[in-house]
Amino acid sequence: MSPTAAPQPSVSPETRVKPVYKEVLADLETPLTAYLKVAGHPSFLLESVEQGERVARYSFIGTGERRRLEARGRTVRVSTPEGAEERESNDPLRLLWELTVRAAETPPELPDFWAGMVGYAAYDLVRTYERLPDSNPDELGLPDLLFIEPEALVIFDHLRRRIFLVAPAEVGNAADEARARELVESLYAKLRGPLPGVPGDRAGRRTEFRPSVSKEAYMAAVAKAVGYIHAGDIFQVVPSQRLSAELGVHPFALYRALRVINPSPYLGYLDLGPVTLVASSPESLVRSDGRRVETRPIAGTRKRGRDAAEDDALARELLADAKERAEHIMLVDLGRNDLGRVCRYGSVQVSELMRVERYSHVMHIVSTVTGELADGKTPLDALAATLPMGTASGAPKVRAMEIIDELETTRRGPYAGAFGYVSVSGAMDMALTLRTAVVAGGKIHLQAGGGVVADSDPEFEYQESMNKLAALVRAVELATEGLS
Image 1: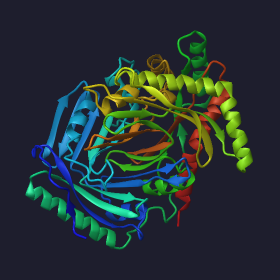
Image 2: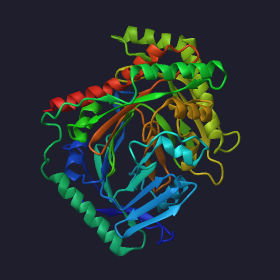
Image 3: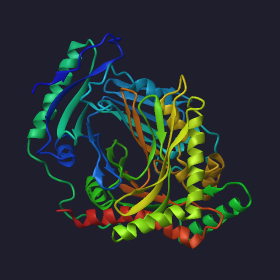
Image 4: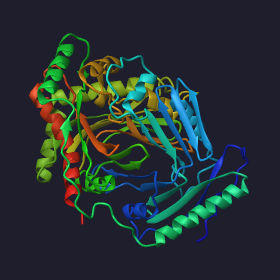
């Protein structure tokens, strides 16, 4: 089948793009094999396992780079193959929106995300939008905001068992459309070619992790947080700790291991240049179709049962736990308040309250909060309003973040921020950056924490943070042992 160009609508050809695409059968490829065949540097792979059990409809592979946006504080740098430009901005996310959203139309057979920008917003991006202390060193030295626009996407439609090879082209620009067609045909040729060497087939060097703080120091931080709660400063706060090491294997081998050990709703391998994110996040931060926005607080956890009867009993126990319910309702209220800052008055509602969702190893209490964006607001305004999620900061959020700055010893970087995409069509899907390895400068960094409340026990909270790191540590061990 020859590449197809979407019909040209009557819009400004200077700013709009349309998809040039080719549709092929997906019976001989998987997202992993396709990624290995087509991906260069930078590139990304986004997958999803719904509730730990079913593969979601779409997987996305991006390759090449048309444009890059990086922000450090209020300094924003936009790069293309032709050069780079720096500017100051009090709202880097608004600039990201203006650079990205320019779709002419989306053909019905394609998902909303057929072109756009993919990347992450760090936890520390919130300092651009809120007055917060900034007393800790930035040991990772990474951008607060980093997004790339790929040259092309390989989109798996698992429902229809089809692959779409898509490259955007400027409307009314024949030369650009020809370039897009050549790119699509080049991707097709790579897909039909042999599989290259697979990272992870051989054993790597053993990884020795070092904690950012001692066990005693972490427990002291928890005790201090409990003191703030008893004093009435906050209801909850989420301190964290980081494990770091020299990485002895290819990051993609780690992704292969992690997606087996911990299948999650937001699986991602983002090779963005100065940093690679290897993600298995359980939680959406915020998503939008362009007008409607949604956030899904997750709080309350139990392990899965050994059989269906035990599983159901654990779910009932979870929903009956007064402490778990109180913490969850607090985070639902926080989500309502966050969306209320950018949504039309009266449109914010809890569309689903306290439902148990089951994943591969655990079950969680999940709620859904929705709203309609107010006039003049974009999905990225909703991202600014919700970042960081209450499950990774605390409540009230601003005071909790002030206390986190006091209790922790380094800036967080990507941890507890968000990663995902913004489409040229105006759709957005951003996951919370939890259960995610950050690889930069030959080192790997893992980070996790837990919600501290009035009756929290420091020993228990330390162990809880280590438990949350266990899947990532095990994935590193498995990748190091070799995956052949």
